Length: 94
Image (cartoon, rainbow, N blue to C red):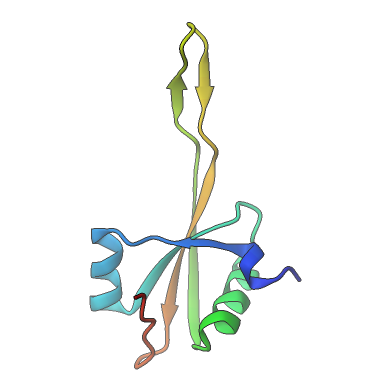
């Protein structure tokens, strides 16, 4: 297995992610595109010492962007993980 820091890139702190955390005890992370749900679950449990009940993932294709010339480039594709924690567990991001 990879190290937890190799699997989880960043925490997504958006308005929607904040509402999910407050109302449903779900937290949103940006993870490596080839990470599996099991690897994500183990990484969160090791990093934050919390109990993970479920992991949902979404794959996002990189956007098409225009460069200086007439050619088009592409941003990198990425993966988002929505992690549900056990009732009573919270992760504080300060």
